Image (cartoon, rainbow, N blue to C red; front, side, top):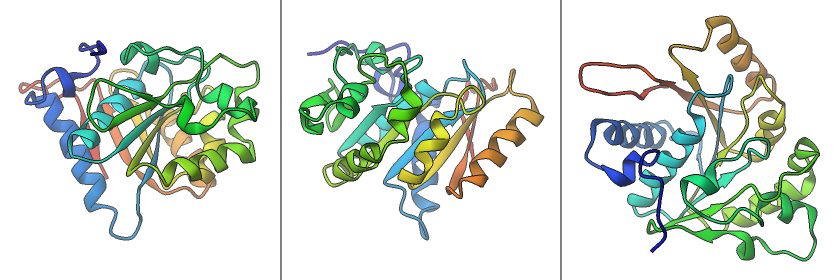
Length: 224
């Protein structure tokens, strides 16, 4: 069996923990807010680096898989990818290779994880032009193809104020979750990020306020 990074995957290592329960609450919140919007493909980004958006992406994907949904986690952060490290999976072939090649099929590049119902599409070889690759028509075609194979797709993208990679993907997803870090994200920067997302007309599902300590050790909160 593949080994996982249990430190980052709290929903796998300790599924009954308060933090894991917060991720289940997040999943439920998304479900109940989807009466008018079907959030099959969800993009996750943050305002700045080190906000925990990749950890949020991975754990949200895990709780969807644990709920019995065939789930795919896509590491679309081709600047500082972490998905292959979290799930201990090869990264030499992934999304960038799929976008740059006409010889690869999506199903050939996606990898099974040690968690039932959860596959991952790693970032692949780091390209010199990630923005151009993500903005290509082929990216939209790939997501459309993958959406027919999975019940839920979670896409981890670079911080929105560090690059426009997340913004160029918004036309291909059903909704966005913005991760904010309580001890780092400035209110003004959060407003700028939200405004940039609104300009793309993507549906903002909500935000996750990360690194918030409480007496019950709940570090993740969801606001719709």
